[in-house]
Length: 316
Image (tube, rainbow, N blue to C red; front, side, top):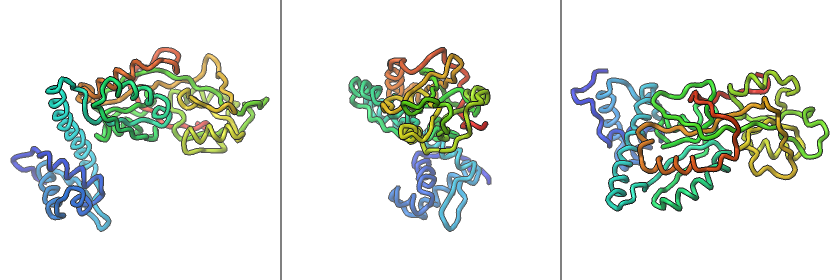
């Protein structure tokens, strides 16, 4: 597909690309944007000519981004967010309050439950003009960092140090390292003989070598949707689990949390953003509060590899 002489896409063209990707069709995007279907179709064709690639596969069931379209839509989201930040920060500077406007945060479940609430409380006390929007994302595959790469989040609370690489152009920084522990029902005399309760987000390459060396850990006989369900099942006496510190914060009195010894596995928790968003007032303010959080969960020095988590199983 040949490019036009003017390859630059205007903001309204970027918004059309994002709307088509988000709604899954030209008609639905038109309704969202208040345009006609023909206007949306014309805009997409114009963007494809400018870029020189087909961005959407058209079909009876709607429109789906091609690989080129996925890249284009991710960049479109990030560019539109920077345009929004430009307006918000310019207005904030005029009022001597630069940290204003929405802040889109992606976090895995246990971080959203136990790490974010006090951080957001301090953030809003200092910057009442910030509007946090938190999305809970499963920390498997591309996980929370994928939300940043796709332009759906400004910053992600993520697990770092695994084997799957980050998308290019992202910035990472560690916050703390948390230890894993054995969690089992109170009063059981031989907890290591219990069935294993597990969930998909539980561990990555940083625990795999430790897990493989533990001949007492069986294959999981119960697999739950998330760590909250695991804790509930263990509490009810259905087995034991190997869980990281954030996942057992606030555990009920019906479970016991036992140390796995000096060679226990750990995982690093940190944040992921983009270099451009890292310079924004809202992200800088949020990072300051994250770093001010008490380091009550971790032990040891953080791993600085800046890599992503890959899911694993006890049988790995």
